[in-house]
Structure formats: structure tokens, C-alpha cells
Length: 156
Image (cartoon, rainbow, N blue to C red; front, side, top):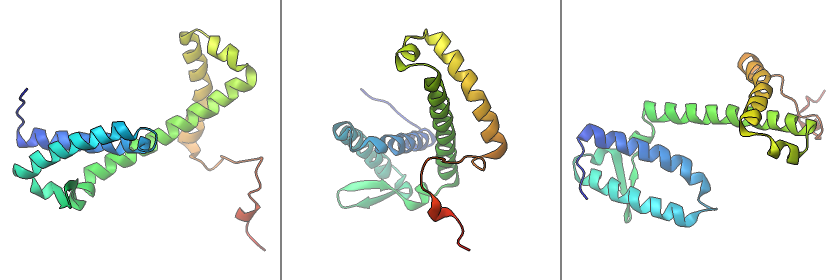
């Protein structure tokens, strides 16, 4: 199999691979064999790019090639990762809060037995107030009520 890339296409592919590896790396402990395969593929593509006029994107170290600091600190790369983490945080928080609310109203069995379309509609309806609250106030009104967080209080 053979495929050809322009320099711009190869740079875009490397950016996509970097983003994918960034995300997949969080499962390194639970799926090490999968990540090892990804690492081999990344090294193959990084070596190819490094040897074909894109050395400025990489830093060789021992027997591997890594994205350079300039690559990792590129404004687009940093902004894309920051936006991804931000969106993921809010999406997951809203989903978990609305799911918690639903499970306070029904059993897990009732929740699982809902038709998928009905479950999505109910879940979406429960998520909307959280979307609105967090869009307007961020985490300012979010409080943990059942833990001892007294160490956070100002001493007088």
C-alpha cells in the first residue's frame, strides 16, 4: 500500500495524530497493548516526517522521536487542546449531574429500560437547566454540601 502527502497534508496529519495520542494517552494504564501499537505507528510517521524535511517539528531522544517543544506550544495546538478539555469538562459534568437527577427519580432498571429516544429526550431535558446555569455563572454557584470542606473557609 502506498499513499503520498504534500508537506501541508503531512503536517495536518501529524497534528491530528498528536491530538489523538493526547486523548488516547489517558487510557495508557488500562489498555497498554493498544497504546503500544499506537506508539509504533506514531514513531513510524514521525520518523518519516523527520527524515523528509520536517525535522523542526520533532526532537529525537534516545531511539524515539517526539514532537518538539515549538510544536507542542504552537498557538493552534494549545488552543485546540484547551478548548477540547473545556468542552469535555462541561459536557461530562452536565451529563453526570442530569443523570444523577434522573436516577433520584427512577431506578437504574427503569432508566435502562427506557427506549433510547425517550432516554435521550429525558436526559436532554434534564441537562438544559445545567447548560443555562453554567453558561451564565460557570462554577460560581456550584457547591458540595455533604463533605467536610471547612479547610476552605477563611480563618478569622
